[in-house]
Length: 187
Image 1 (cartoon, one colour):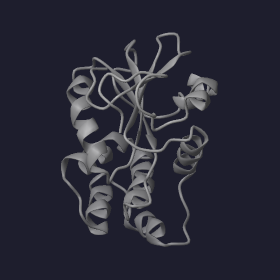
Image 2 (cartoon, helix red, strand yellow):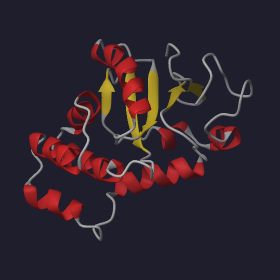
Image 3 (cartoon, helix red, strand yellow):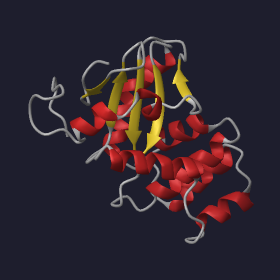
Image 4 (cartoon, rainbow, N blue to C red):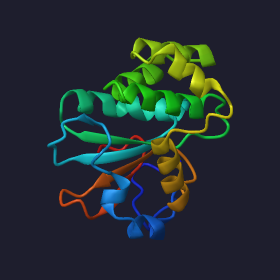
């Protein structure tokens, strides 16, 4: 994890490759076709790479949530499910199905506020977001594969050489510069 107050080029190694981060355009890191929580017109824009089953990601979400709810910031979510969390990839896929119904951030909120432990918990959240049982069962099949956005997010994360989540990135108001915001630091 990042040390509090760490910035690019200082302190212990970042959970991301700095040179890859500098090369990636902000429009690739925060594409305009993704759901935004908070105020889309805010000049304080963030992107969070996260895992819906990760307790550290839940803590980061808890930290950002009051600012999201107050409309102080805008947050774009990028999936980076970790292999150590057995239901993280399923949760990512189900969140995208919920997103097709305008319920993406509601699903994320359920995952981070209800402390799911089982596959059934994540499935129940999808049902609460209006995802039909047939679509859910398709995602439960091991051969179903990932949703396109989940695949894109994972590929971007690997390209940025992300080594841990949560990873919160601040975008400059002009959309050019990207800065890592350590967990616990004020965005």
